[in-house]
Image 1: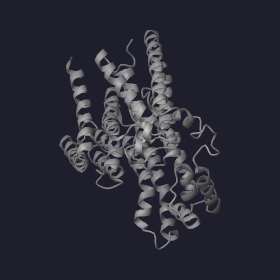
Image 2 (image 1 turned 120 degrees about the vertical axis):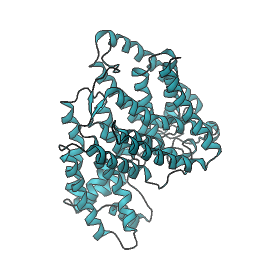
Image 3 (image 1 turned 45 degrees about the vertical axis):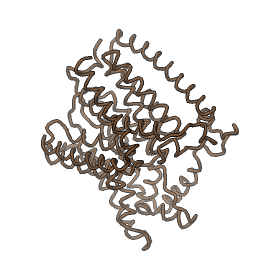
Length: 447
C-alpha cells in the first residue's frame, strides 16, 4: 500500500469512526459541529487562503450539513449557509474576487426588492427576521459563493480533492444510517418516503446529499482509483451510498445524481483519447452491471416496493394520481401570486403565510423557481436567468472544467424538488464558475 492509498483509506476510516461514535454517543455531534467551525477558522487564518482553503472548509461544512441536522449537531439550523458565507467572506478578504463577477452583485441586488416588500406585507404575528432569513439565506449563500468562485483559478487535482472533502462527511452520514435503520421488512408498508430509513430526518434532504455522494464517488471510481485497492474501496462506498439513497424512497436526489453522472461521462468522453475511451467502455459496462445488482438487491430488501415507488405506484401497484406528492397545488398558488404582483413579487416568505391563512397548515415550497417567481416577481426571473446562463457562457473559455454542467444541473434539479433548504445547491453551483487548469496530476488527458 503506497502513501496515497494509505492516506485515503485513513480518511475514510476516520469518517466511518465518526459516524459510529456519534450514533452511540449522540452529544458528540455538537462537539463535531463546533470542531468543524473552529478548525476551519484556524485553518483559513493560518494559511491566509493561499491555496483556496476557504473552499475546502466550506465544502466540508456543506457535506456535513444533513448529518449534523439529523443528529442535532448544528450550532444553528441554518449554520451551514452562514458558515459558507463566513468562510468565503474570509476568502475574499485574503484573496479578493474577480472584477468580472458583476453579474452576481446584480443578482444579489435583484433579491433586495423582495425583502423590502416583505417588510410591508408580512403579518405582524410573523417573526419578520426569522421568516425572511429562512427564505433568503439560500439565494444569498449562492450569491456570495458565486462572487468568490467567479473565474477563480484552480487545478483539476485541487477540484477533485475539493469534491472528496465534500464527500467525506457523506460517508459518515451513510455509516450513521446503516446503524440507525431497522430491518426494512419491519418498517416498509408503503411507497412513500420514509424517515425511518433516513436517520429520523427529512428523506428529501437526505436523498439530496446521498445523490451528490453517488456522483462524487462515481467520479473517484473513474478518475482517482489508481490501484485495485482504491478501486475496491470506492466501489464499496459508491454502492453503499446508492443503496442508502434508494431506501429513503425519496427520488429527486438519486435521479439528480444519475443525471450528473450521465453529463460527466459525456464530457469525459469528449476529453480523452481513443485508448482511454476503450478503457472507459469496459469500466462503464462493469459499473452498469454492478448498478443493476444494487437495484435488484434493493428491490429484494424492500419487497419490490422500490420498483413501485419509481413507477409512481402505491403499495398495491395502483398508479398514483399525483406524480409530485401534491406539490402541484403549491406551484399553482405561486403562479397565481406572481400574476397578482408580477414586478416585485409578493415579498419573501409571504407565500408560506398565504398558504397558512388558506389551509391552516404550514406548507413550505419545494420549488425554488416558482417561489422566486411569486416572492420576487420579474426581478427574481432575471436573477434566475443570470444564475443559469453565466456558467454556460463561461464554459466557452473554460472547457477544462468537465464537471461544469454536472454542477449546474445539480443546482437546477435540486431547487426543483428540495428548494434551497440545504447549502449544497448554492455551493455546488458556485463550483461551475471556477476556472480549471490541467496540472501534472490530471488523469483526464492521460492515455
